[in-house]
Length: 547
Image 1 (cartoon, one colour):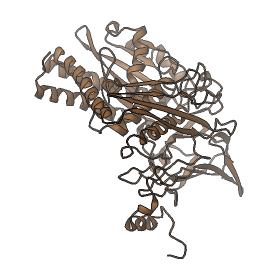
Image 2 (tube, one colour):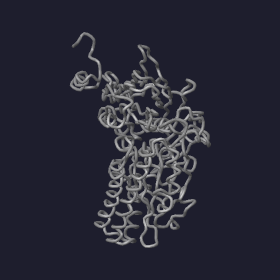
Image 3 (cartoon, one colour):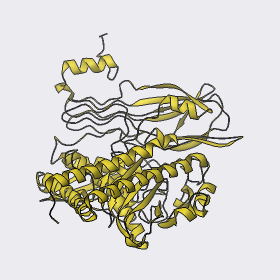
Image 4 (cartoon, rainbow, N blue to C red):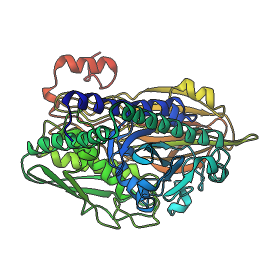
């Protein structure tokens, strides 16, 4: 249908605003620190076919492939057969999901008897069972990582609110008051999305809302095709590495071949390491999301809505059985490590074509850090996603002490941790001196947290990377720094690997250090004033013999 430009502008921005409101509702309603404080969740609106129309600006990795994840549900439950009060769930990484802790919930948006779209939310759930509270670095398969939810349809009145499905979930998690509270936050966020779209339909009519949903996706496609067309045609190759698999010491390469032709881009990850026995494998939907995010971030402007139209000019392939497309039932809990190396590899490839648009390697590692304690009243589980320093760009220094570009989680305030957890205490939280890679523009600084353990029997589990290999700079920029995790016990230093776990004692001091990002351009071109500021801030060292 023919759309009036003014009405299109009003409706399209209303849909985007509704998705953002859903995201705000999700965070405000959450119970766990990982969702309430770190904001590890997202929300989106989909059309009736499952195409993403608009999304909250929260976690790119979770939403880049939400349409593909919904498609797995739609294959079993055609959208027009989903009745009011019915909801779709999925977390199975081998049925279209990403990893078990990210549970996707889809509510249909009805106009009369017709489904006009879906409200979608995803949250990283603190604990979904499995072999260890929060995360299980020793998982040998996906079954060891938690409760698997294949594409499933439930009736809220019958199966939630004390019903069978809710009781099943509650019985399989260690911290039910937080986990089930976060599920209810997803329900609340989706209810807002349903309401806002129904209000638009009441005011403008279903046909017009459907047409704007399609037009908004077409707009994003047009914009990203125009951006790709500005990139010189060619074949560009980039590669980065994961330190190791947590068992051996051999690096695991992630290789991207990026082919630009006209208005389209194809990315092939042939040459990437085979899948491994530990949990750093990445399901293909995760690989797809990471790749599309890297391309959009480097080639386009932020005002282009990130929806299914964005993905149409981009094709992604990865060999079956590789680190970025594993065979069932490989464990995948730490799939972000492979995804961020895919991001780095794509960026390095595009640096050859559009050097002024890319970012140097940052620490670019999701460090999932978990402390857990079984007390007289049950489990207490703290889990946080840490970042590091961003890489620098042609125009600016890298950001200090932030999560990686695919994850975008916030740092949990120490006050919130003190309020929720009594078995440990944060004693130090600071930027790391001399952690930024030098350059015309320096990389971002890393940071550390030092934690005092207050109870015997506390367990630590983590996965991370770049403990052995530094993030590369670009065009003469110096590399960033590595990370580390260590435990001080009775004057003895215990060094943990980047994928590790152990039992702690009262009095132990855990120090987690995150690395800085790589620099961009030759350090000699950095201005004296900028270097003086860095020295004053403690981010780089003063030359010998100066004060």
